[in-house]
Amino acid sequence: MTPTLRKWLFETLYKNRYLYRFASTVPFAGQWRVWQRLVLPRIQGLDVLELGCGLGDLLADMLKAGYHCRAVEQSPQMVAAARDILQKRKLGLPSLILQGSAQRLPFSSHSFDTVVSTFPSEYIYDPDTIAEVERVLRPGGRLIVIEGANLLPVGFLQSLLVLLQAFVYGPAALFGPRETLGQTPVERYLSSKHKAASGVTTEVVPHARFGRHIPLEDFGLQRRSERVQSRRWEVYITIGEKS
Image (spheres, rainbow, N blue to C red):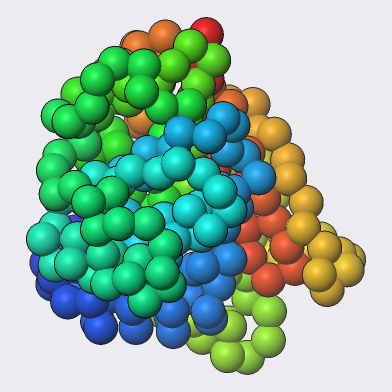
């Protein structure tokens, strides 16, 4: 799939909550929400800002866990969908979700302990976004970005889904991060078979390929790259720590 067609597809999905729900569930074997929740044990402090909250599922999870949350979402369709999720789950107020831009956050400096962004679009690579994140973070705060995730070719159905993802995102997007860790996709899959079925491991990856286009160091944020893996999938997390 060409980059232009891919961009059109994603923009179309993002304007319809039902298509977006389908696209973030079925092609990923229902693991999207599992991947989003990897943010929770990495949050520090109580005041949390989510950039690009989408349908609002993670925002609701964080509110239920007791965090004081706000969210900024550029799409009016997703703002409406996320507000509906909060209402259905009886969590927070609609005013917690603001329509706006990550490059111009409507908050005062040093307002948040943690900023999170899961599966963001190109805005996360914009220096203006990271400058704003650094501004609103308190000293000792952190940015948590789940930039991407892959299914592993476990079983017939999931192997088909892996092929579908390779078609949509391109083989480099799926296999590049694994190859930079010194193993081919097949070797990574074979090593994953030795894990317990429910086992999840976290590995710190120095000089990781993933997340390298997020300009953390330009704004004084210390980089930490983590790869989280189960038998069925692996997830790439970039963390920026403010001193």
